[in-house]
Image (cartoon, rainbow, N blue to C red; front, side, top):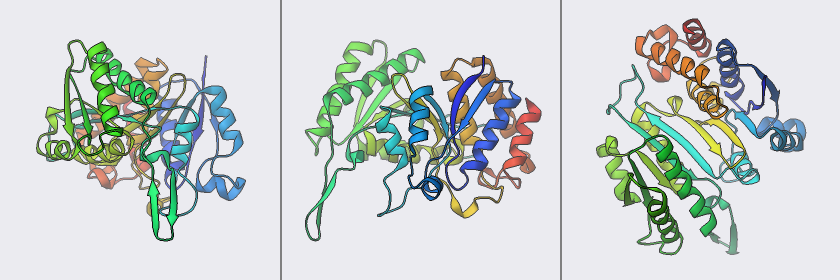
Length: 335
C-alpha cells in the first residue's frame, strides 16, 4: 500500500529541493501518495495565512509530512511557521544527525553526533512584551513534563541505536531554575534508563569550546530549545555545512521531516540548491515508516556520489560545478 505523506514545498529553494527528494524516493520504488500543501510566505500571499487551515487539517489526519524550508521574517512580520507546527502537533523532539560525509573534506574526520533538542518551550515560546517604552522582556519557559519527556526520548534513542554517551549542555550555573530543571530531568532519565550509557554534563560555553576542539568526543547531545538550535548549526559546520545535515521533528504519533537550512531566496529558481539535506531527511522519514531497504539504498547511492566527487554531479557548496538536477540525476542513476 502507498504511504500518504503531506508535502510542504515552502519558500525560496523549497520547491526545488522537495521536487528533488520526490524524484529520488520515486526512483527507489517507494509507493507514496503526495498531498501538496501550502505554508510560509508564499502561502500568505495566496491564502492570507502562513499556515492555512487545509495544511493543519491534513497533517492532523495523516500525521506525517516532508517539509521544505520556509521564510521567517527577522524582527517583524509573522511568527515562525516551524515553531507553530512544532507546538500545534506536539513535535517535542528535534533530531539532527551530524556525521562526516564521504568525499567532503573538513577540519575534522569521524564526526558522528546526534543533536536532540527540546522543541516546544524555552525562549522559543515567544512570550515577549514591552514593559515600558524601550524596555522589553522575553520569558524562558521550562516545565517538568516537557523536560522529562525530551530527556527520556534522548536516552531511549541512545539505547535503541546503541549509542555510547549522552551529553547535556546547560547554563544551570546562571539559570538555576530553568536550566536546573532541565539538568535534573536529564540526570533522572539517566538513572532510570541509561544503563550502559555514559552521562556527561557541560556548561554550554565550555561545551562549544570542546566541540570545536574535538567533536569526536561527543555522541548524543541533549539540549533545551534555543541551545539546540544554535548547536545543531555549529555541528553542521563541522561536517560541511547545512547542505549536508538532515532533520526531523518528532512527537508521540506525528512527525515532520525537514532540512535544517533556510529558504535561500538569493539562489531560488536558479537550479543551484543542494538537495542533499532534504534527501537525507527523506531517508530519516523512510526509516520512520519502516521502508528500511529503500532508505539504505538511497543512503548508499548518495554516499557513493559524494565519495566519487565528480564536480559535475555536485553543487557548489560541496565543491562541485553542477546544480540541483545534476546531483539528483547522479543519485537516480546509481539507484
